[in-house]
Structure formats: structure tokens, C-alpha cells
Image (tube, rainbow, N blue to C red; front, side):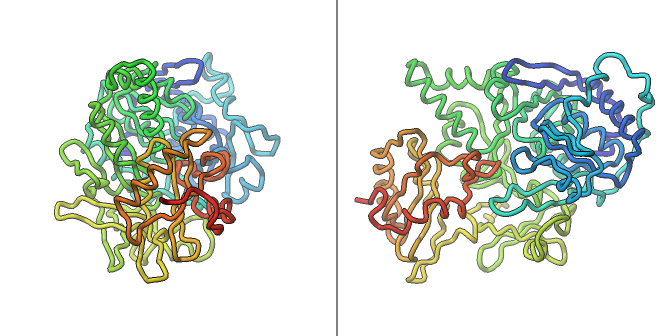
Length: 504
């Protein structure tokens, strides 16, 4: 798939770049032309196969063009997420970067402003720029195109080299499931530093459909202005959209489906979610409104492993296992994944022992998730093995289903379960609004205890002082709760039986 992309010039499809101020349209043929010019400029500066550049910036046209230019030169990219890294010489030395492109202020040697990349290319061709595009290159399946980093909740992010074979197999599997083509417009608003978000740009170049790139903050603007056919987002995004739809419906008295069409447009073919457990109530909400939403499962270390899709969708599962992937369940219920084209066999950058804990000698990836396969090959994920609580009576509690039940309340945005003394369960709840609706939270606590009870009985709920967020360090970039950090912040309340809302 990647070699096919590099060997042809797109003749249809448009890249839409949306900002809060509006949307700009760039034909994919023009994006490809610009990437060739940038590649020529990089090559003139001595960059080629074996070199690596970093991109530390928010989503933009320049990000897309530079990534494609590097791909055309066999120059590796390192996608660096803003807020997680700083544009310093130390960063460049740590990851072996020849150049670092950023939209952050920096006067460090070798750091360049990404916004200036296309300044003189969008009008007249500069005299000093070779106008010959780079010669076509071909990749072998085990060659690495980019270093991607874990979203990790603790410590320095681990770096992983992604092979062309793993990218190809994911692109091929997704196209087989969803058949993207002319008339489609895929909305991308998660950071392009996450390799999977770049898949959709590659898909547009391969299959002639449109793609919209924006930042998370501009996602709802893009929905209104561009009217995409496919929206790909983390569960937290769709939970926020659901809240917007419900609030507007209550305020206006209009039909839910009409309000949803106002928000998402009238061209939605399907919604895609993954990267974290999705709220079953939110999935059911969108499906009832005629906006089919499909949950999937994968890790940085595995790419996409399973995906629900039209014609193969099972409620409660994360989908049927993809061709080229094999899911193995050990005696403890822990999921491991073996791939025909693995992402890699070890981390490129990590702490000692990290690779050995995750990658087996044969490349099998131990995910750390608990789950099972049904008779038809659909995968069900129950939670994290590390998040299993063992009570003093020896009973093992899988927290995910309890947390999902609590989150059924619109008053609760997120929650994390702990067992401070191995005797009773205590939840830390992130309120959906400020001030928190403590009456609704108490009611949901009672409902969850009535439904589950027994060893799963929650004795108290500590309401967070402020909602969990990326800014306060309690959510990852993919909106997953950082359990260790949350525990550290609320350690005193967790250990004090007088604190929090008590179960009736």
C-alpha cells in the first residue's frame, strides 16, 4: 500500500484544513506536489535514507506535507506530541534528530519553525530550490518509516519504530471493512503525532477520497463546515457530543435526531471509536439516532487488532479479529497478539526491561488486557490485568464493568475505582459539571450497588475537586484516566473513611 502510494500521483480528492476561523481546501494533487518540493529541499540539505527528523506541532497542512516529504526520501519521522515534549537540543540528541520542526518558540540550533516550511512554495518556486521531484523509493515490509510514542500515563513515553508491513496490513484491513472512496470525507482531529491518524491521509491518497485535518478544539467547527462522512474519535469525544445533543434538545424541545444532524451534518456514514473503553450507553445512543458507531481495539505495539464494522458487529465486543492478527488468551485471561506483519519486536527507546515485559521472543505482544474470544472470533475486553483489585478475602474484582456502570449517569464524566485497605471499594469520580451534581452521583452510586453488589459494592465516592483533564495531568492525550496520578492526588480522601459520598 505504501509503495503504491509513493509510485503514483493523486488525481482526485481534497485535503480540508479547518481552523476555528474557517476551512481551507487543498487538492490532494497539490499536497503531493508540495511534498515533492519539500522533499527536494530536504535532499538538497543532505537528508536522505537513514536520517530522522522530528515534528513537534499541532495538526496543520505543513505537518501533512512534511510527513509525506520524509516518506518520499526514506527519512524517518518522529511524531512528537505538543505538551509532552519541548523543542530542545536535548530532545534532538535523545532521539537522533537531524532537524526538529515545531510550532513552539525555540532558538535552539537545528530547530525550525514548521509554519515557515511552505511560505515560499505556495506562490512562485524559489530560484534556489531544485524543481526535480525525488526519485521513487520502495520500502521492504520490515523497514521503519516513523517512530511513534506511547501515550503512557507515567514516565517518559516509550518510542517504537513502525514498520511498513504493519502500516500496510492496517490500511488494507480497514479498506476491506469500510470501502472508503470518492464521496467520503474522513475527519481527523487527534494529533498527527499518533501514527494511526496519518493512516487516513495515506488512505485518501490511495483511494481518492477527501480528508479533513484539524485540531481537537476545531472538531465541532469542522463537523459543521465540512460535513464529513466518517468521524474518528476517542470515546470522550463522542460522550461530549452526546451531552451537547441532549442539552440542545432539552433547551429547544426539538427531536434528538434533528439536533444530532445539526451537529454532525447529514452525510455521516459511520463513526469510529477506540483507544479506550467506550460507554455502552453512548454507543447505543448514536446507533439509535442512525449514526452507526463501531468500536475497535489495538495498541501502539500491535496496530489495529479487532474492529466492529458493517456486516460484522457484535454488541459488547471490540470486533472480530482482523486478518493477519492472532489473539491468544492465557490461563489468567490476559490477551496477547501475534501479527503476520508486526509493528516491531522491541521498543526503540525505553527503560531497561520494558521491551522484554511486552514483546515475546517470537514477537508476540503481551497487551496486559483481560478478555476472551467468542466462538465467532469476536473479542471482548474486560479490563486491565493491572487494574484488577484483589480483596483481603482473595476475591478478584475487574474494575471496568463497575466503572462503566457508574459512568451511566450524565453527572459522571469519568471514574476510577480503588481499594485503599483491600477491604472496601472507593471510587474517585470526575464530575461532568462544576459544581458537581452530588445528588445525581449519589443516586448512581446506589443504582450501581443495587445492580452489582456483593464484593463489587462501592462504599464511598470521592468527588474530584475539578474534572479530570489533560491540562491537570489526570488524563492521557487519548483521554484515558491516569490511575496512579489520580490516586496520588486523592490519596488522603481515599484513606479517610469520613470523606466522600457514602453508599446508603
